[in-house]
Amino acid sequence: MNSTRIILFDGQCNVCNTFVQFVIRRDPTGKFQFAPLQSEQAARALQAAAFKPTLSDQPPGVCVPTSSTPLTPLQTSPQTSSPTSPPTSPLTPPPLDSIMLICQGKVLLRSDAVLAIARGLRFPWPLLTVFRIVPRPIRDGAYSIFARNRYRWFGQCKIGTHTTTSTSNIKSRFL
Image 1 (cartoon, rainbow, N blue to C red):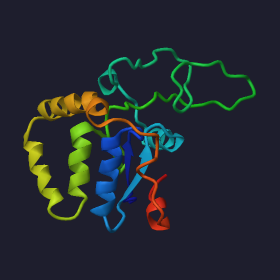
Image 2 (image 1 turned 90 degrees about the vertical axis):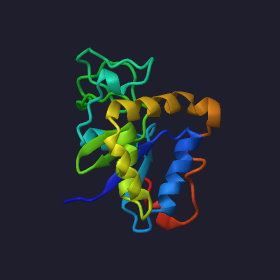
Image 3 (image 1 turned 45 degrees about the vertical axis):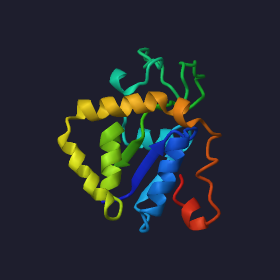
């Protein structure tokens, strides 16, 4: 069984990039790998996990296409395919308002992802899983309020500026 855990994060979010650095420092065994949600690697990882976003997974203003025209990774509108091009499987852009964790073929979103990540870190961070007793709608509601305001409160950055490090050991953890 593959124990790789992939954290997908908004590469333009200062909070998300800081969170990735936080995880790296508290995951000395390298259980977690990382990819910005805006990357093709993230799209492929979500496709491999058979992630199909629902309307509730999308941030406000992002539409889930209802046409049968397949989407290529990170494409937001259907395009016509030529008869000679290989078929692409449908893929909707992931919700950029949520950190995601792919673990054992499952995709966890929002507070479920954060708590599962905390469980995989060294002590004392697994203690945060006690918050699983809080009903998911309440946890995700608080998460959504924070996610909606994070750019205003903490700003944005260019994708990958905070996550770029000089050691090859750390670089190898990014897809």
